[in-house]
Image (cartoon, rainbow, N blue to C red; front, top):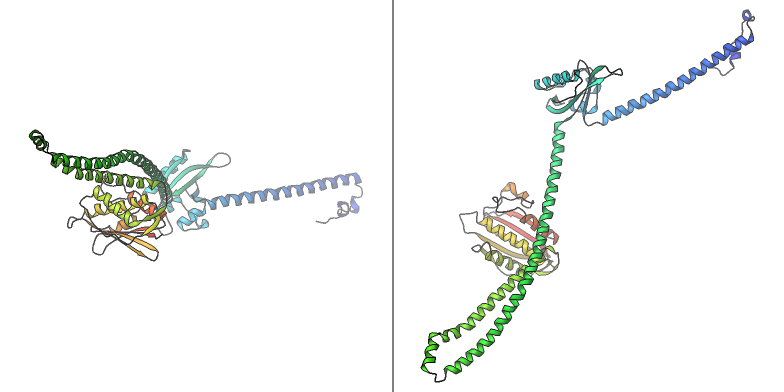
Amino acid sequence: MSNRPLTELYLLPDDMEGVGDDTWLDVIHKMEEVYSKLLTDEVELEEKNAQLEQSQKFIFSLLSAMSDVLIACNQDGLIEETNSALCALVGRDEQDLRGTAVLDLLADAQSVQRWQLAMYHAASHEVAVVELHLRDAQGQSVPVDMSCTPRHNSVGRQVGRVLVGRPLGELKRAYHQLREAHDALKLAQQQLLHSEKMASLGRLVAGVAHELNNPISFVLGNVHVLQRYSSRLSRYLEAVHQLDLPESVQLLRQQLRIDPLVSDLPSLMEGTLEGAQRTTDIVNGLKRFSTASQGELTRVELNSVVERAIHWVQKGTAPHFEIYWKHGADCHVNGNAGQLLQVMMNLIQNASDAANTNAATAPQLHITLKQQQGQVEVCFADNGTGIAPEHLSRIFDPFFTTKSVGKGTGLGLSISYGLVEQHGGYLSGANLPQGGAVFTLTLPIA
């Protein structure tokens, strides 16, 4: 449009010279107002078009980003709008799906019946939730949990339905992940409870060991004094018996069996001392075991730990378990003696349980200690039935056990594995070619 004034654009013809100038000015002003209004309306229309285009892009982005399947259909069940999730599921583009009947996407007759029932409820302005089986791009049946909702126009008239749903496979995976997270949380809670129980047990054992030390010290001290007294009494009685004693005294000597009594006193004293010393060793072992929850690292000699573990298991739950072990050269590691003792006792006890399952042979365990390349390997090889192949990858999982109910908690190997890792080593299990299982404890040498 030209930028010249309207008075120049609209020249008055000769035959209209009779019209007044005021009239023409009014006409020109009206035309300018109309033109200005047209410009304003055009600007507003462009703004509304831009807003509409922005809204369409926003809605399209939402539909594209939805992971749920979306279908908008008319009253006859013909698809009017959908989203990329459905296109990806059925392997067809949006243009191809428009005008297609929802029935054509269903995979079985049962889904057709459910869809017809959902359409009936939607006609009554009710929301229906149904499970429909859709046919995917490969022709497979995919269950989808659909919510069918009535769709209305601007005046409230029902014009179709909206279906929104998610494939049940995704729901099952989400449920499975949630269940795994819940199980992991329960496991962590149980492990924390077990750790707290072990710590409490360690404190209890330490307290009991401390309390036992005092009476044991009394016993040891008194027996040593009695040994000295017994020696003196023996010398005195020997001198008295060399005298010419009355016959009544000699008869009393025989009746009271004084001579056998005096001769038995040294062995009785030695037996008492041995028992008290063994009790002291047990108390010291309990004190070392109680440090398992304290994490104190010292220089530990492994041969003595192995022998202590063998002694405790054989004196406790496996008195007839035949264990072959030879004390080797001194081997020191940096670790916690109580924790290492707990690991080895658990391995020996497990070997005893496994070996007793093989009725063909007497239960046996061979323990070897070998040092090489800055590491020490302690192998525990039993003659049991071995580990089932399907269980090999799970033997160190918490609460996994092949023992019958009440025979095991499934925590021993898991805790042992963690303790060995804390010492910078590793614990492994395997089957032997000749039968039975072998567990190998590897630690860095100090």
